[in-house]
Image 1 (cartoon, one colour):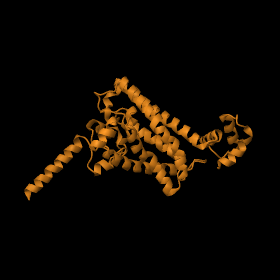
Image 2: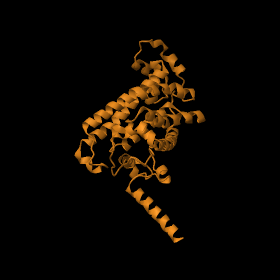
Image 3: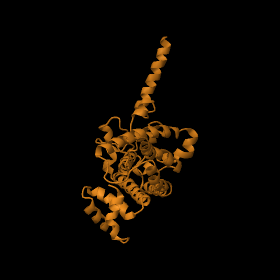
Image 4: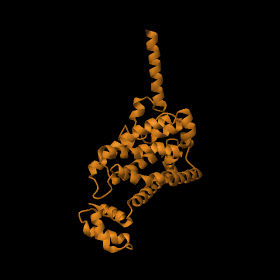
Length: 306
């Protein structure tokens, strides 16, 4: 439904209309929309500036999800009962470490990520992103998010691996490795260059997808961001529970995969899946090291036998 048509229904409300007034009028005029779609349409109609409306909604959503998802891990870190599932159980973050980390991340969000969030709407709509109502069907949203997970994982693997090259590590990536035993809040504890470089895989993939297919909606972007934030924070949580997703999906990276990366400072470069590290022999940990030693010994024996 075009916003222009809905605009005509609220034209008589005047500039002093509240969001509630707009929502009531939209609900009367668009009975075919569900509650979420009516709230969405009402927000844009009430704001009367689509770039600002998207910017505010995007930033607030990002902060609520990031710190909201981190909060359970902060609580878990404070309860000794959960220590048996902590991967590096002798390195529980202190309150001071978590506070300092949260402060730097918040500053980064307001200075580095906020301008990018604000520019996303005009750039993405220029390439064809939709943001009207109704929303796309659930199957299409799910399909596109799966594709973004796969594409972003590839981007993250190669650029993350590049950031472990000597000069790049020292000047860019070292900050993220401040904590050898990561915790949820540290997911976006990184230098501005790293935030923009790795963040392009998260934001850039949907924009490129839009450019190629001309079939993408802002609500899909939000759901993708929410799930990717959950993945990043959980991967940095430092906990591996029996019900963690990687025990259900063996190719899912999970906290144990990324925790080893922070502990060893090398290997396990992918974000969401294990296949890049497996295929390119960059897995970290004792099991992977043992396989590499055994393979080298087998090669040596084979040469001697010739």
